[in-house]
Image 1 (spheres, rainbow, N blue to C red):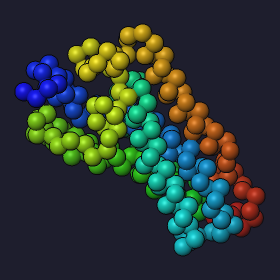
Image 2 (image 1 turned 180 degrees about the vertical axis):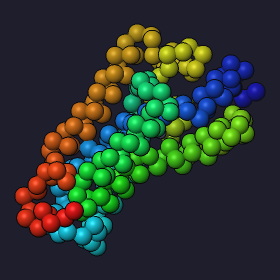
Image 3 (image 1 turned 90 degrees about the vertical axis):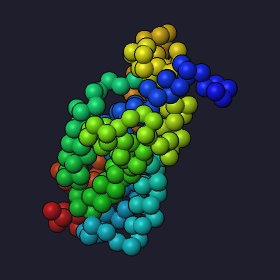
Length: 218
Ligand SMILES: [Zn+2]
C-alpha cells in the first residue's frame, strides 16, 4: 500500500465519498445566492422593463461567478448539517422558486441564474452519484473524484455528529467547540443573505421601486 493508505484510511475515504456528504446544506447555498442577487440587482438598470438587455451581461456574468465561488466558500467553512437531505432539497427549491416569483420580471433572470450557479458545483460533482445512489447502482469504488476541491475530503469543512462518518477528530461535531463553530458559520451565511436583502429590497414586486416605469411591470 502507498504511504497514508492504511486499511483504516481507505475505509474512511470510501465513507467520506458517500453522495450526501462533503456538501453544505443546499438551503444555505440558496440563501447566499439570494443575498448576492439582491446586491447585484443594484447594478441593473431598473428603469427598463424587459427581462434582459445586452448591457446586463457584465452584471449577470459577475453575479453568476460569485454564485459559484460562494459555493466553495460555504463548503470550505466548518459546518454540520442542521437540515436532513430531503427537507433540505425541498426547502432550497421552494425558497428559490418563491423568491424568483416575488421579484420583478426585470430581475428574474438574475435571481434564477445566480441560484442555479450556486447549486452548479453540487449538480456537477454529486448529481450523477446521487442518481446512481437513488437507483441502487452506486458503490464508493465506482465514483470518480469530484471536480471541485471543496468537495474533496481535505477541502471540505464538513463535520458529522456520528464518529463513524468522521475522517478526523476535527470533523466530529460533538467534540470541543465544533458545534458552536458550525452554528456560527451558518449564522454568518444567514446574516450575509439578510444584509444583501435589506441593502437592496427594490427587486421585490410588492415594493414599488423608485423608478416610475417599473410600476408597469407585472
Ligand atoms: Zn458542494
